[in-house]
Image (cartoon, rainbow, N blue to C red; front, side, top):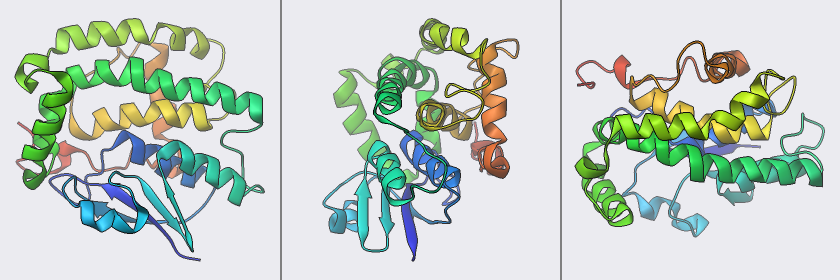
Length: 236
């Protein structure tokens, strides 16, 4: 059975930075499933017409087409029940859904305010006008007005306080080993790592130690991923 994941790319096709795509990639690795990742750009909407969707990730697993990173996790648990669970039973799934919202509504906005100009630089040139126009409309201000590393880092520091409490008691959000909740949140840190050199947390922070552990999961999938600093002349 062939498996294909449509995955957002940047100025180099190997630069894969979407937090949502990282969720899907880590979930597939968690299940021990091979996948071909196909690079996709923001303006390549027609490429995904078969999925009736205009965003990534999109997973094609044989005859199945699954959109949305969270739905991909749920699908993988249904389709591959003998592999390690991602979401688990109904109670665990409800907790994972909380971390989905926490990652998207508390953590991601703080990171974005910190790295948005680095992110714009990492995006493929043909995508930049689209990205700027759609996101600035969403923000109600220009990137230059929105960008504030000092405010973003302060916002992130406050948002991470509950996570610090958890990580002083367990190595991972999901306990002794990572699962859906870890991947749902860690995708945001891979997003920042791939496009920016910003230090989001201090190395004395329990969150930093968790990030380091997550980078080493699945044979270093996160640690070995291309970063903007790996592309000659790309980081300014």
